[in-house]
Image (tube, rainbow over all chains, first blue to last red; front, side, top):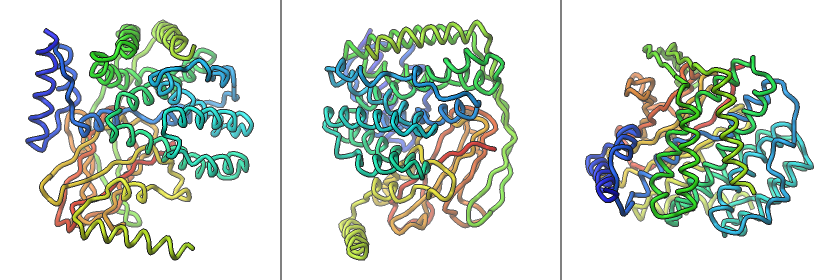
Length: 300
Length: 142
């Protein structure tokens, strides 16, 4: 049973590579849902493609900041928890969580908290032997100065991007999957907490609902690694609970042909396609509760 | 010192071209939107056409409504060098391409009005090196 599942998955990916066409994420997802099997020998290229689909947590954090709500350190994972993380998996997922927390402190210009989170990010990176990808000196200088947020975010994101690419190149893409999952989970947690205090905030409600799309891809990734790793299998089960909490959320999409023009050598697109999210207060309460449950397991 | 670093970088690029290697990661890292652009880097992609033997490289990303994205494309020497990026929505409807009126442009700016998975597909059009890098930056639509 198990083996036919991965055989189909593998076949899809191999056919896609040979034909110079990658399978759509939906094709892979359908195969994972309908079959079962062993030996997840997936090319690093295909893994890269799925990993790349996970949005950057900073996007959600920026929406939170623009909601006008004040900075709240209690939303974040305490840096004191660093000592709890003994395995590579725990370190990777919490590196993602702390990375999101670092971004959150940065966009709110919280210098001391930013330095504390930078310090713990640096320690976890060293523990995972990826400290060379973190430009600690530049990040510390920019955080200290609090003068150039754009540069700070740019270097932080470049560093995390390099870490991801390094994990993939070193055949440690499961750590990359955990890093991205942690970052996304923390961003969703913060967004939920803020939204629970402003249930009328349509923008944040929609952003929570849209995460259903991302969750599908995270489940897809964790399914690939869960076969070989019990910790990841447990996390996958938790994410499936979160999928259940999202089951009544709907996202509709209507395509309209876009128009475009060249401005300063850049093609500017004007798009009139639309999407609409339907999410109730009850959905948000359920999603928040499951996210808290999963996050508490991960950070403690 | 800066001049020395410039020459070392130039030499490394020239050497990798001469050896037929594609240092796509390095090109992607040079392809980020500048801080002055107002865009924040969120993703970088390697575009290695393996000297022309590979005709298509594809990634995907969830674009969010209310956010403006800048997709930058670079070749060995910053110009796109025939690296064509085409955005498709989840149903494979074409949203945009930097191949426009016969020219390959350096970037696409996409103010997203519909959240969803988008496919970011790289192909080559009269490319010399079949080697490039690309990045996505974002900013909120104010």
